[in-house]
Length: 466
View 1: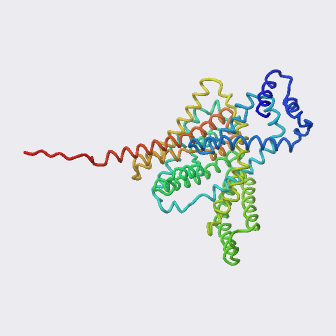
View 2 (view 1 turned 45 degrees about the vertical axis):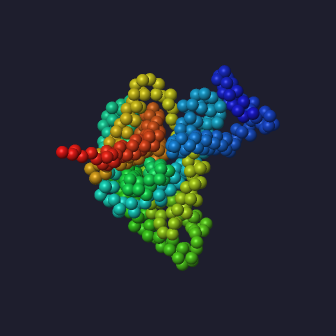
View 3 (view 1 turned 60 degrees about the vertical axis):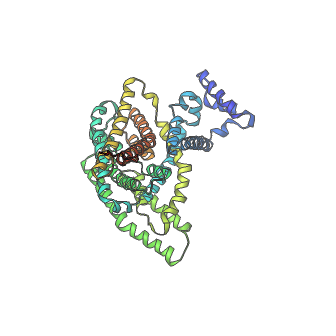
């Protein structure tokens, strides 16, 4: 019955401008005997949004997983399809009912909580132990993979600023943000690609994880400073905000981190507990929430505090694994899809209405791939890696995924990005993440051919008899 009614709803929506979404849903619900007001209450509307969003993201995520792509690509695509780019275009009245402007505040807040939990998990998944194993190569490659795309992003901002920067945004702020937006690597997506391909424990996998970890920390640190500059009204307030950020980071690393380790020792060793109880889990969530609140009050963003809280979590006795399993699973299945959808509601591909807009979008994608792949490729080759492994590392570092989406939403909320450039950057994030798999396969092929060329011929050896 549902499959037959959905097209009818869309056709009614497009047939006449006088028919609104509530009338359509009234017809759909007539068989149940419910009144339309039941589905129009704020809670009913929010629950309906949850059902549609989670169902769509899980479906597309599963489809993309089965074709060898990370599920996050399908989830990101589902968010875009649920927005004005498809759903709002095909069924405008139904879209207006489900995602009415007065119902989006609750969805936005839930999505922000989901992002904070996600960044908390990202912070915990950073294994800084990789840095000690390949310190020199990690430092060179990670910094080159940030410097070149950052430089290209700043140069590209010269061309884009006049037409695509947000109203009232200074060139410095726009240029810095574009630079850092092209420099981000999605550490969680990269780690999952390595696991799915079975190369997480290889030399290439270890190097990629280490470089992505350094890249994440560096990029988010720079982004925090960019946000501080964008939020400040004058030089004095900018300096104060940056000073507070530095002070807060020092407190988290020098004070909070050792105290958390001592508390963990008490609960695990002194009381001999097999796993953390509810009190420990509640205390952990309080630390994350307080850290997120602190950075929000300072003037950067709550997710920076959540990320830092994950970094300072104790590593002993599988404590982080326990938290990732409990918190990460819930947030990725229930709350992060809301963020994908909310980002999709902001992404209007229809704003790219002419050839010039699409050429600009393709140009952004090309610059993003060239900067990240090229910077990683040549720097990795200089450290002694083969051309094949260097190319594969560049393909992995070019993965942007959800982390890029988080950064872009910050820029949009701060008014740095116009709706049109936001849509272009979201498409860039989607395309570069999608390219990771094919480019990684190409790198494997390059390595195989290089090995074949260096191996001696196994055919018979002919000698000339005089």
